[in-house]
Length: 194
Image (cartoon, rainbow, N blue to C red):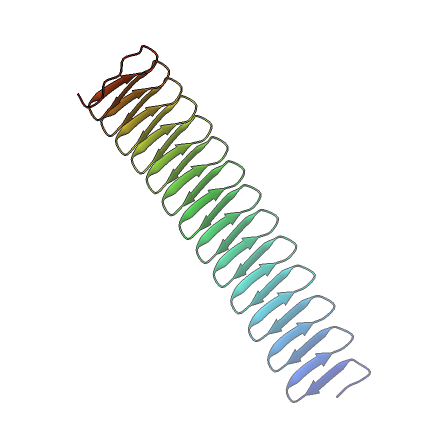
């Protein structure tokens, strides 16, 4: 043990207090210069590199690797369990789906959803909110243009034609057909049951 020169050896380890090198149990520790090695990992506090259990962490430069995933805080790339997340650029992938928050594209379970452009696909159906086309379960629905098809029937709200189960109904023009009979409200002709 040498106290004045700053070298201390205890049980095979080297300790230098003024020069800043400490070796304990095979690890290297330098407090002032910022290098620390513990259990096979490298840690540099001032320079910003930290390795623990095979992962790389850079705090100032913004790179972090944990359990095989890549995380960049400033650059905006984050990978967790095989998915890609970009917060600033707006791309997010979780469980095979794509989510773009700023650009407006969302894909979940095979469906496509565009929030700004107005297109939405859910379970094979197409829905356009702004353009006015909606398809659900094989039917066509147009809200602004006025065409609605449900279960094989045609309904036009603005133009006034409605077909339900083989019958024709015109509200504005006044013609109505139900079960083979013709009813005209304005023109004054009514026929029921042939």
